[in-house]
Length: 152
Image (cartoon, rainbow, N blue to C red; front, side, top):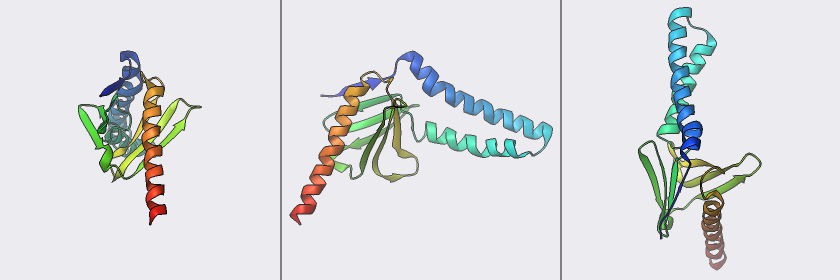
């Protein structure tokens, strides 16, 4: 059984697309200001930080627009990219629910510079159901590791 979780169109545009457009705009502003006003600290800072944030958002998919869960795998999808993890191959899995800000942080898989760290918002359709499924996977994994350690 495969289940898809998506943001509404409004949330998608304001929470995922608009910040990326804002990053691009700030980068262009910094280049223009650097050319016209010379090198000042804030322009250089923006020129360094914005590409890093952009790459993290678009390639790293830190805010996926869709999540697909099946009994075999979980996939984080956005910006025409897909990061898929087969449950049986996942060795690292952490879920932190920051309910007071309406977001959850998911760290999955071995360390990768661009991927494996995702934020999901409570505005995602089916958020609570998805969080329950993901937490069950994480807890099942911890329980299985504990049993393995005890049996050694």
